[in-house]
Each structure stands twice: as structure tokens, then as C-alpha cells.
Amino acid sequence: MSNHTYGPSSGVILPPNSHLAQPGPSIRRGQRHHFLADLSQCLFDFVVQLLPTPEELAIKEDVRKLLERLIRNVEPESRLLSFGSTANGFALRNSDMDLCCLIDSDRQPPSASEMVVMVADLLERETKFQVKPLPKARIPIIKLTLATTAGLPFGIACDIGFENRLALENTRLLLSYATLDPTRVRTMVLFLKLWSKRRKINSPYLGTLSSYGYALMVIFFLVHVKNPPVLPNLQVIPPLRPITKEDMHIGEHNIWFFDDTELLKQRWQSGNSDSVGELLVDFFKYFSHDFPYNTSVISIRGGLIEKTYKGWYEASQHSATVQLPVQDPFEVSYNVGRTVTKDGLYTIRGEFMRASRIFSTRPDRAFLALTQLCEERDEELVRAPSPQPYHGPPRSFPAQSPYTVGTHFWRPATQDRLSPPRPSNKPLETEQEQVQSEANVPDHMAPRRQRWTSPPPPDAPSFEQDMYRKHLGIGISMGITSMSPAPQLNSGVTTGEAAVDEE
Image 1 (cartoon, rainbow, N blue to C red):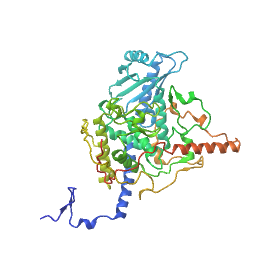
Image 2: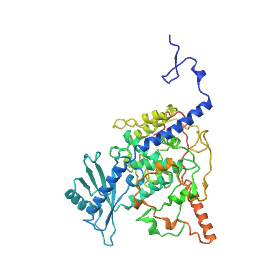
Image 3: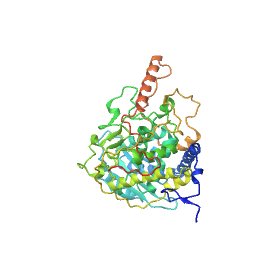
Image 4: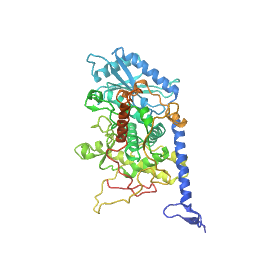
């Protein structure tokens, strides 16, 4: 007869008297510290392998220049600019190119749909690209593909849009967030892009969420859920000098955000000391158990917004519109998550729960946890169960530690602070951060708003210097105070096991 026993409800065979060998609190704390440090290092090592190579970036730039020269045969005053992940620092190796054609002319240019037709005809005649014009899409584009060759082992896939200036501002906004804290922000977004791809939950055409949507979820979490915030809300830090409405808007859309990231990095440091490993664990935990999917909209501009306020709640619209509402930062009536179906949301949330469960059940093996996390799954979505009526009293969950630094024994409490300017000879980033921030940033993505944010000249009167510092301090305080605080942890689930709430 075996001397081993089965652990309760675990299916694991335990040695005799195993209860005597259970680690105490101090050992568990040490294991947790080691796991989180190991997880962060594994994430850094993992993400470095995902970045585009210099050769790939050079080829893509050559393609952009070629296409720009050809398009100038149709519109001589046009510019072809990269946007999206190609320009915001979140590109994976062999990712698609996103290009936007702007026409700088005093005369009325052709419409976007007309440009799609004319340029597509030219590219079909003059290049080897497979050309697919989509002139009637919500945003008219041309889709280009180039087959693999010996010198181009992964081919080229490229979308060209026209006069989509909001997309350029979206790109610049995400790049600004990535620049503020490249080690944590870029690492999280790049990992989640690959993870969602491996787990087959990043396809808008199949009912799930785009990579852009996941990037917005990460920024929302770092701005509005973590306390102190990892990032300030750049869209609520006001300009420090008078600005016209025309300079703040594209059409009816307010595109203002504080993009002077070098100034912010000199004058402000987040009080949040969580490592990227801790942030990733909390991200999965929050979107597994604590985000109010039934009632709320994700907004990096405004925090949590009620679905009823946005009109994205009930059957007056298609159900796909309201399953996972993610508000666009500038086009605030546009739901980035409009493609997510009921089954898509059920699958996405199930993947968040699976990830949280993996992290909690492998506390001492970070590499194996990441490997298991990124195992490729089948393409098919999980069918969501039919809603069941609930006739009992409202269910409540015992309060748990919020997503706040200092609430756990492995998170030291620190304060947000307005820092004095760093000496000019002191590097802004550590060597590790420099590795993480090696993004190929094109010139047109440089900050554009310094004339409304830059400090007065050194010889300005002292009262002007004092007034500037005061206004900057007030602005930063606004940026780190959530407009609509996200709910704290309330699931009562500490082991990563899936919680079931009412749908």
C-alpha cells in the first residue's frame, strides 16, 4: 500500500506528513519575490526576440519611399507616412505596415475613395504587389501584399490610407505613453500582442479584439487601475499657454494631449514601483475577475465610463457593438471593440482567467509559466453559455487588496512626486530601459506641442518661472488623478481560479 496521499481536490499525490513540510509565510514571500523577479527578466528576454531586425526596418523604409515616389505621380504634393505599430514602438517582427497618405495642397484634393481607385490602378501597373482597393470601406484603404522571396523571406503586407490624420495622432499618443516608461509599457504591450496572437484572440474578423484594442487596455490599466498610476493621463494635462480651438481639434475631435515626454520624465516620476512581472500578473487578474464587463466602457481618456452614458448598452444596437466597449482616445463615439462578439468576449475573458490561473499555480517557474501561457490554441471560439435567471440575493465578494502599491508585502509604498529637473549629464534611462526603448521612431512622430508646454527661457523673470512650475504641477496632478476611478480588486479569488459572475 502506498505511503502517499491525495491532496484535497488537487489530484496531486502528496508524500506522507507533507503538511509538516509546507513553507511558512517568510518562505512563500521569498518564493514570490523570486518568481516576480524571474518573470520580469523572462519577459525582457522574450520581448527582445520579438522586435523587428534592423534589416527588416530598412526594407520597410525602402518600400515606403518607393510607394511615396509612385503616389507623387498622382499627387505631387503628397507625403506617405507610417503610423500604427510601425511608428509607435509596438511593432512585432514581420508585422504589417500601415501607411497614411497626406496631401499638402491649397486646392481641394480628391476624396479618399477617389485616391484609392487612382493609386491602386497605378500600383497594379507599376509594381509586383498584389493590390486590393477598398474604396467603400469606413476608412478607404489599399491593401498590398508581396510574396516571399529569397531576399524577403516573410513577404510584405501593407495598408495605405488617405488623409487619416486622426490615425497619426493616435499613433503619436501611444508612442508618448511608450516613451514615458518603455521598460514596462512596451514590454507589456509587445508580450500581450504575441500572447493574444498565439491564443487566437486578436482577430477582429473572427469576433475578437485587435492588437490596438489590447494596447488601449494596457494603457487604461496603467493609468486608471494601478494606484499610484504607472502613467499620467496625457489627455487631461492641459496646455501651459493659450491655444486656439483649431490647434486642439481635427474636425470635431479634440486631439490635445501633453506630448512633451522629455519634460514629463524630468519633472515627474511615478510612485508605482511594481515590476513589469507584477503589472502583468495584476493585468490578467483585473480583467479576469474585477473589470465590470456588464456595465462599463474602457477609456484611456476618461477612465471607466458607464455603457448607458455612451449608449452602448442594450439591444438598440447590434450585440457585437457592446460586448467589449473600448473607446477610441479621440473619436470618442467609436468603439474599438465593436468587432467582439458574445462568444469572442467569452473566449477572451476565459483566456485572461487561464493566464491568471497559470501565474498563481506556477509561483516558482516563470519561464515555464510563460511557455504554457503562449501555447497555441485552436482557432475556434468558445461558445458562451446562455444566460440563466438568478433569483437569489445579490452576490457580494469579500474585499481583497486593491491594485495599490504598498498593499502587498512585496510592494513597497512610495509617493508620487514632482521631481526637480535632472542634471543634463544624468541618463534618463538605465541600460535595460535603453534596450527596451529601441523603437524606430520616424521624424513625423516627434512631439509637436512644445510651444504650448515648454518652459520659459532661462533669462525669464522669476515670477514667470514660478508661474510655469505651478501650472505644470497642477497639470501633472490632474494627469495622475483618475477622472473615473476603476474599481479595485473585489473578487475574493486569491488562487487565480476562475470566478463566475452574472452575465
